[in-house]
Image (cartoon, one colour):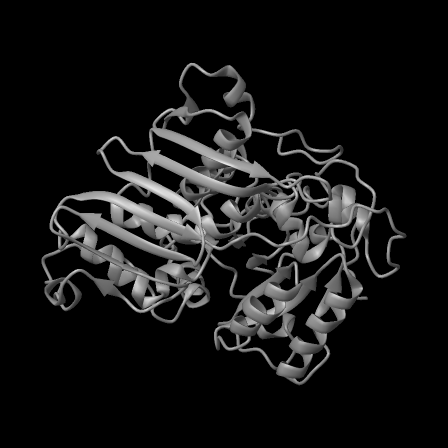
Length: 426
């Protein structure tokens, strides 16, 4: 395992001098294979999605060079290193189990964060403070974390992309543009269908920690808990300490297009009424069954239920939507379906080549990506509102301007969670 020579306790002091543009470092820092105009990237979290989706796409980008990979599991780490080295035809990719070693390298311009949700904000905040641009998987863990992340990204003037592919998927981009340009008349209702949950509740039996896993680092800011195989890696999604369940995992996809079409992507609903149940009798404890209704200040009602992931916008003059993830565009009439968006109408920003291409372009031109930090935070908030309403068992009134619940101290306390020491966002 290749490790930079520095003390972890002093890593922040070595990287506090932030820049407002990528370094575009000389080829000598890469070895002889890298041209001087390549952006140096480090990967933090190289599990299934981190390697098979994010790393795979970055290796295709001619203006990026992966120089370091990080993961708490040696198996993931070795697989990612082999993938990178095989692609470049050398052995230059460094590895570490501690993400702080990635942030401390002055030659790394940007980091790609593909960790479990409870690490997203903490790593991203430390990264922007260290002068790195960040592409981070969705969602945030809490409403307050999203507020902090937005503030820190803006304060340090870094490029931050909330990492999903939806805004580059033609069917969702087209759907939102049709709605924003009035093709279905006045929007009245949005129907969001998210996938169904797993069918088992997870085995909570404590087990020995595998030798290849740094379990304490995997837990990080989350509460102390005994290791068991159903707790880590993919299964974290169904455990409240690390995620927000299916509503956060998939809601940040489809709610984004819903907010995009409703022109509320920097705002949100004013009321949520969530009904549902939670997993019981096993390890998993996030929402299991759910039926959620949101109300927006513009009168639009949005409902969310489990099933085949789908999206539908209903207006005074028709509807547009699809059935199934990336399903074919459907509409109430051929006139809507085949409508042409004129040059003087609303054109929503997209990047047909995808999220990774968009992020790299923005690192170079210093423009906001197609899914910037504040919009990502607002979409995560929509998910958190549903979870909190279901958890409290009652409707909640939300003020999207102040980002607080109206006259509800109990709900407002749930906007944040404590971090396990020594981890902190202070």
